[in-house]
Image 1 (tube, rainbow, N blue to C red):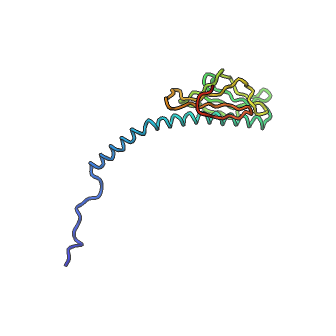
Image 2 (cartoon, rainbow, N blue to C red):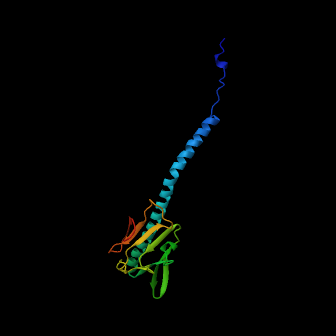
Image 3 (spheres, rainbow, N blue to C red):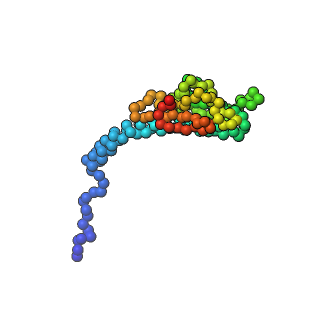
Amino acid sequence: MSHRGKIKSSVGAGFTLVELMITLTIAAVLATLAAPSFRDYISSQRIKDGSYDLIAAMVFARSEALKRNTSVDVVPASTANWASGWTVQVTVGGTTTTLRKQDAKSGVSITVAGNPTKLTYGNDGRVTVTTLTGFTVDLASPLSGVPPRCVTIGPSGTPSSKLGTCS
């Protein structure tokens, strides 16, 4: 008779406490190294989000001005900082209708030279303000290494975004 099938292994499956502690230490070191770059990534995404929301409002206002054959305004909630939000609205016969509303953008500042009280698209799709240099979208508390974005409006009324401040 053979006893081979009846021998049990005393080696247990799983991790020892030392292996678990080493793994957790390595994970903590990697997380510490990744945190600053992740912070910069989140900050740059916040800036992109603000600039793209502004561009979307401008494209919508331009489209509505062409479609309705009348002027359409993009009006900031606060002329001190467009990051407080804005509305796209049309006024016909003395009645103002809000077409779209953007809530405030937290942690972002949106400034424009001269602080215009509104941005008006005419029925030809062009902006009626001729002195507009562009909207600078930046963090409310800027970080080094995270550049702002500049939203400009071309001669035909189409907005675009690029890295850097508006000049």
